[in-house]
Image (cartoon, rainbow, N blue to C red; front, top):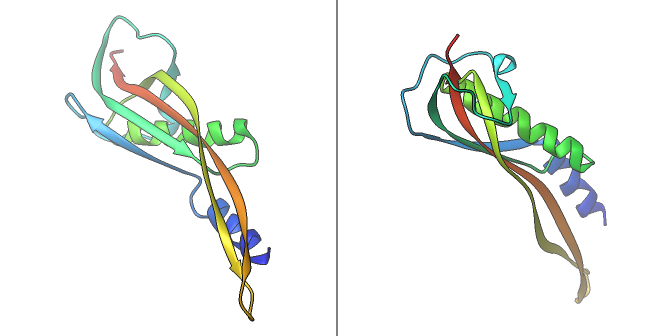
Length: 129
């Protein structure tokens, strides 16, 4: 049981989100992720720079996980110079696994577990002023 608690804490503290970027257009100089706006619809005067996605295991609630994933999306977009993202998809991935705890004199027990991570993807764009 102690092993499970230690593993959970390590996962929680070791980076809350990860992501990736596919560049499909002209990149721009990187900007501060706080400057990246989140949009639900594509504005008329923009350039598509790429596609970004993120996933997060961090956080105790689904909302916290989604918030971490959204911040990762903004970081990915900012790195390629996008000043906005247009959300495309959101979801939850559930993976099953477990840990086998062996006993000193043979045998042991399997402790099943599930992890839920929030996933987001967006189009990274540059909105012209």
